[in-house]
Length: 293
Image 1 (cartoon, rainbow, N blue to C red):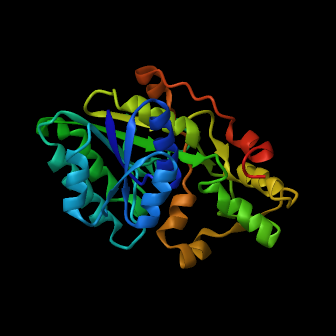
Image 2: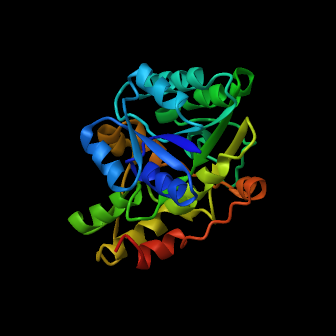
Image 3: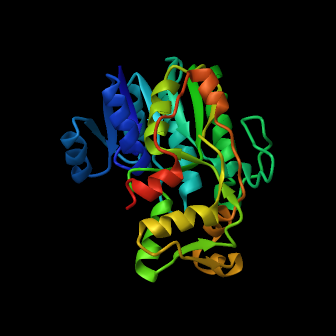
């Protein structure tokens, strides 16, 4: 079974590609350059030259595959338009073939959850940075009427392999002597290890059309606690520097509001529905003695 994977050279996508290959799938990654073609080949993966902004290349990659996983997200001001157009191009190419298409969304579509642990039935109140995403989710979840097995995964804060958002905590601690966070750090984040997340993508290829799942594992942690662990990993003795939200907005824009969200999210449905069993070290253990040191 051949899987066409966008974002195959990225943080999440590279882990997904590895998990797919280890599970016996043939993986073809979307490659924007010859450097990416060579990087994929070095990992034993196929490559399809194209770009998210090139509808013909996306459609060709999708038509030639037995399933499509969309992990890529363009880093530009027109991200909402490009992502929606890419999804529509892929759905159009897969129409009537009844093939799986997994779309990567995220936890920020929930907004603040506060003291209630949210699941897939929780109402949406997306932070401005991802205000466009719920509509794209619905395109995918309703794709069965077009003959596509659409599935949406919402990863929470991803960590592991020394990457993800936590690298900003570690880097700031190394460069400035303290891990910098937005707000007072009393807000909570829920986490998932990138290897466990990759395993869920593989399992989701067999999910029913219209499936929506959070990729989350373990209890939420206060951001200040996580930043302290990151600071220790960087040799900064657990020191943390807080940046007021208003000040952070001046340099980070709406990304600052996303980082200030207070979220507790359950991944129980993925475990129950697909038999997902996360195995990787928890986030604090990974920071204290794992890939971030």
